[in-house]
Image (cartoon, rainbow, N blue to C red; front, side, top):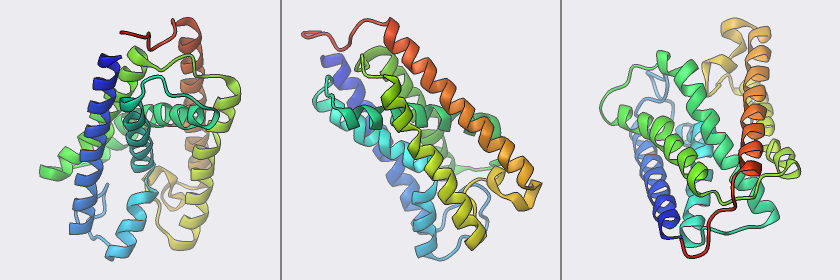
Length: 215
């Protein structure tokens, strides 16, 4: 289990560094996406925790920190949180790479934080799950419950965005491309989430249980 503990600890440490760095930049008025003119500190902090990227990295931090202590940890709700962490961070990396990366023009510490949150943590998390699990943990009951977070996030963001005029990602802003575009993108990302969940379940079912005592 020593290799599993070491990997989970590394992942948790990188996620913590990434989140703290991004939070410091937000407090200092650093750019997030294309916000060239940051709002007040209170609004910046609220927006910080509203990003799916930040929430998925937080889930990774919490779950990998726990697994660094006990790589075989289990429980009904723990399975849901762990599935959300792995699936959410995988979707974060994919959506960022294909939809958001072309829109960003960052440098310095902003670029470092962006790469840690959107590339390094997703890679460490997914590779760690592939290698060390723990498994078996993915069943359809847990997967269905895991969908509550991303679906709920979309609903909250769209409702609050209609009220405040702020959306964390440009593809959710109906003023740019219309509601039809928003609906299509949301449906596509939801489908991606389901595909990643299904892939997790299939991989989890076919692979041998992990971790192995004494490994």
